[in-house]
Length: 266
Ligand SMILES: [Zn+2]
Ligand SMILES: [Zn+2]
Image (cartoon, rainbow, N blue to C red; front, side):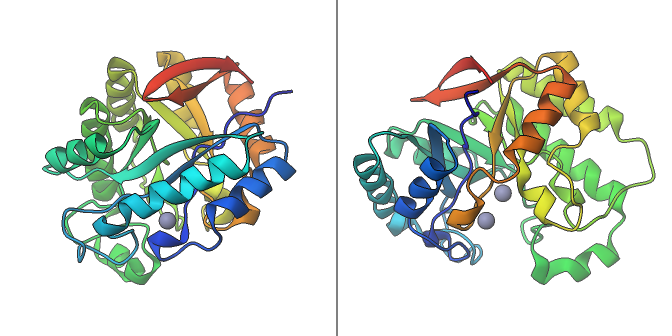
């Protein structure tokens, strides 16, 4: 069986990951992957925006590190990508980033539901006490739909990140999911099955089975990512993610080269 590519992994440049690209690549070969992609947290226009991403002046160094891994592991296909934060109003900046290097894909992720609250940040967990979960879901999925519509991204990252710490609205969120997935389908944007959720309090792959079923019905393509922040996490829990995708009906996933999508069986 050909394993899906692991398209979501980080480097120490983001200040909260360990291990060099060579170490991630070595691990990928060990676990039997034939393709991976580095998608570290992209710089913001302002380097003091937060403290969990590379600085802008490190972007070339990031690309060099990935290029070095490509040279050192010729038996492995290694793609060059970024996990880019989507915030409304940041579109021009994202286009500037896109023009700087021959990227293979961009993962568009929503971590921020306002300019100051990154909902997955453990240091800001207390903020959840002040907020209504449904309101967070509404803002989050509204932004996710805008990210999909923007056509700035090939992949939408961890599509139900607000569940990370175990929060869940009582209301029916199906209309929010539908709107986002309709946008993804219309723009030809894939969603990732991100196994990092299994390592968090929610103990679930992102996105949920419910969202994935809707995605399949609408014909939204998928890809896979471990969101590895250390080499041991490369390809982690892919067996579970593959099972979930198969149970939902998926038999194909995406690969990307120079921002062009290709479908392959898994
Ligand atoms: Zn991270
Ligand atoms: Zn992320």
